[in-house]
Image 1 (cartoon, rainbow, N blue to C red):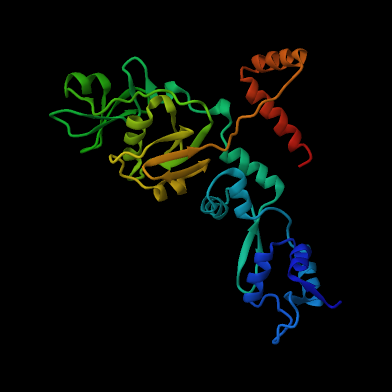
Image 2: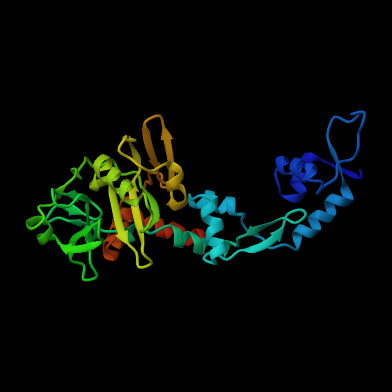
Length: 322
């Protein structure tokens, strides 16, 4: 036969039937004319399909941005942005006339995974964003009769204090409380959610809705369910425990605002609920008692949890051939 069916084309080129259909509409691949519809299946010329297959063989092998985004639990826009910045190395490949896409190798995928997925032992600690002595947290909102709005921050010496929003002046914590009578605008504590992993954001510190987002998280989720770290490049690493809470009317941000800053996990809105879903899924592993003791000892020696120790071991074996 000198022709392929749509399914055969998809199998030959390693693409979906939907892609075959769209390539046909774009005239990248030509269907065999059948004006009287005498053949039930759409057919494509074998020689042309074989030529496309040969061309694809010469192109770099790897993963498309959409596949990488799905695997890492981030938006496709985030992957394209990192490619354009040069953070993720990718090869350009042509797709039809005057179009191009990117291919990311398995090695670069592994590097991107390390970049976008902070290990569980490298998450921000509570002491980084919460002052237990005074019971205050970074970016928490305060006010007084003298100052409309002030935010808890730390200066270059890591001293706790207030940033007065009206004039961007920083003052020590004791001065803010005693001289300006600053008091919290809201409580920041809530019940700790059952651990189902974290959703991770990286938000530029000059983002206009950052303070509103932090106010919402502190009031609704509570500081027990978030972790915050100020990064050297003037951005904020924010981890929120997976779960669901009311999307309070106090919030002044939207899901579309959050998506470009999402590094790991999913965000959903269902009616009046804001839902954070982690890429982690709980599983159970049964081990012989002797092996369990060895795993416990090995994890304790490294100062990490058993789950993280096993995760690293599995990851090492999965990628050992890459």
